[in-house]
Length: 338
Image (tube, one colour):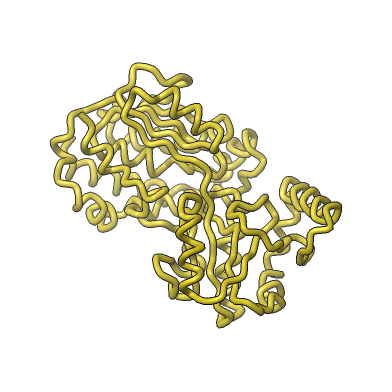
């Protein structure tokens, strides 16, 4: 299938996904939730909506325009180890392998085994010739390259196990926000989406905020009160109770609004229900802090993207096709396999 034809199919796939009716979506959500209690209806539907935004002709064409070898790429068998922390978190890698003309061997997470295969059936219905290029497997073998996503611990295992193959190995990352004290209630609400969507489980969720010295947290906490329904999820509430107990037992100073804990900490990655904060003196000092932590940062948000290399509040969970995880160009990797 020529690249132009594949774009046509992917655009049609997006239309089919966006046209799924409420009954079909409800059944899909119900089955997915049996495997992962974090996968609520709202989070699954949000992931499907964001996926549908990827499958847009203009975006797909803009994405591939920078790669002039996709049509000439020799087909390889690419193994894909998918994570399951948020719904369909591995979809971008899935799409990258498909559009770069390789054969995909995907090992699904036990926590997310339903969604991508279900939607893939709709893709194959549109283009049956792709059925030979997409294989969901229990074990990765007979492969030429691999893309694997996991924790820092599993990354060490992946680096050892897949060392003989060309590979992309992703570790734990998280995201941060930079505040300057000029944020409005509406802008805090957008920040709240960056914090609370997917219960904070994604690498693009905000787990750390940087604030100017003397910053007053009251307005932010008041604005975030609109997200208090998150505490109705038992797993989130359990995390909140546990982390609050640790802070109290250890005598750690913190702020608490009843469902979110703020604690001063230089670390980048915080536990679920906790946001770490750190003060900064000026932008130059903050840039130095960021440089030291860049291996742990997935993305940065700030008010109207005023901070260098940041995006606006509310956009962390809506990356573009060319916003590569860990800033590693997946299509470049796939288009140059030999």
